Every structure is written in structure tokens, then in C-alpha cells.
Length: 405
Image (cartoon, rainbow, N blue to C red; front, top):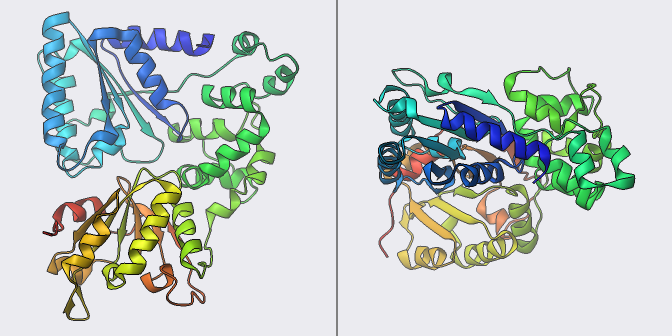
């Protein structure tokens, strides 16, 4: 472990033992989960590691109650407890997020032993970390904290020789970027920007546009400080502008690709625009109209990306019922879960939405006939919807019907 991150973890661990509460926000792959796990290892038996990505609409009540009970038992047994909550924004985005927020307010603020419980919450830059509800906001009690920043001592520890002069001008970047650059060089930086391009442009469009000369100087708000570290050095110059250009991040800002014509290329494009997503939801009432092509498409997508996918569709199309045998064939594909719209949902639900679960952002995509290669795409495109679709798709998924096969 490099000196700067080692000292950061030691200091934060002591603060948590003393009852301090922090909020750490950062870009995808900035090292949040790694730091959370390192903190738990440093703290030992009195620490509780919670992973927000493991919360679902089905298990959140059980996990919420178990977390509360575990923390209070640790205080009773060891005298203190430290909550390390990774991907907090994902847990908060579940249907009972307000209940989780209220329970944490009680445990960390109002309970008799709350002063003996420290806490640190990790989240991405832009998702909500507070839900509007009566009572004291938990987030107002959390101190903002930045991930470790590497320095000259780290350069010496890495023994980078000729690379030291190159890296010296970039002091101020996060640990993950330093290690990636020092081990794999410039090409790896570009690869990372390409892989996370959609997430990066969604999380810091203002900073990115400024870097590309497409907007005003970024405002240095609390949420933008870490974002700016990716692109700027301490002197304010965009030292990574060449990497940003080589990764073609500008193409992600207003990307509207014409959709490919074949089923194979379509499945690859489907995987490409969802790169970096953990779970996605595809909402379209006509999906089961073409069961054979749908099965082939989903198998290609799963083979290409490996990601799980939720499908929200209808078993009524053009006043005719789709057989459950067709739906069953789709859900038998590993990693695919299918649910049906209720009658009321069919009246208001939007077709052709590809949704990033937990954030309700995503893409408006072409109709199924185009996706499955049955219709010529013509001018059909995929359009990015970074601000969402006006529907809480996580909540709509909970309300939908699980088919009985």
C-alpha cells in the first residue's frame, strides 16, 4: 500500500472509531470499493461493511433490520461500531429507500448509543444521497471527504525511474489513476476513458465540455472537485486533454448513433451503449411478439456483455394474448428476468426505454423489429437520456406482475 493511501486509511479509521461521519463521492472505478474494504480490514471486528448493490426490493427490509441490529450489538459488545456503506446511492434508490434513510438517522443520530457509532458512506458523484422526507437529513450530518490523493512520496515508493518526470506533473490525481498509469502507461488511461465514457460524461458533463472547449469553465462545487481531478492538474490546465480526445469522449456528450441493420451488430451495439452498467431494465410491450428473434438477440447480448437484464413487457399485443410459452423461453436465458405490465401500466408506460437500474437514466432505443434485424433501421437511432424518463422504473418494476409459467 502506497504511503498516501496508508496514512489516509489510518486517519479515517481513527476518526470513525471516534464517532465521525463522512460522505465520499467519486467517479466509477476511482477506487471507492477498494478503499471501503481496506478501511474494514484496518478497523477489524467492530466494523460493519454494507454493499448497496446487494440491496433489492425483495430483501431491503431484512437487510435494513439486520444492519441496525448488528451495529447496536457491536456497541454493546465492543464499546463502538463503525459503519462502512459502499454504493450507498444504490441502496437509497430502492423502493424503501426512505425507510433506510430514516433508520440510519435513528441509529446514527437519535439512538442512545449513536455517539459510539461512526460511519462513512461511499457514492458516485451525481446520484441522490438524500430523499425528501420529514425529519433531520442524514446527509447534513455527514462531512464531505475526498479519496486519497497521491504525492511525491508515492512516486518515490513506486520507483518509477524515467516515468517520474511524466507523473510529477500530474500530482493531484486519485490513487487508482496513478497505479493504472504507472503500471500500464498512457494507452491504459485511454482505455479506461473509453470503457467508462458514458458514466464519465453523465457524471461531469460541465467539466468535460470545458475540457473539450465546448463550454464555460467548470464550477468548483463540492460535487465537481473529484471530477475535475480526472481532467485537471493543480495549475488548472487540462493535462489529460490528449487522452480525452483520443478516447473520443466528445462523442458521448450528444451521441445519437444510427442503429445497425443486422441482429448480431444490433446485439453488440446494445451491449456497447450499456457498458459499465451493473443491471439494466428494457421496457417495451412488444418484446415477446418476436420470441425466436428475441431469444437469439438476448443470447448474443449476454454472451457479449455478461450483464443481467430485466425485461418489462406485456402479454397483450394488438388485442391478442401472447402465450406464456413464448415468455418462458425468454426467461429461461441465464441472467434474464421478465415481468409483465399491469393494465394500468400499459396505458402510461413508455416503449423502447433502456434504463440503468438504480438511477433511472438511460437510452431511448429503436423498436423491437429494428433491434431484432426484422426491419430496416432507416434513420432509427439511440438517444441518450441522462436526466431520466419521468418515470420511476425501479418502482414500476416492483408494481409489475411476475408471470406464472
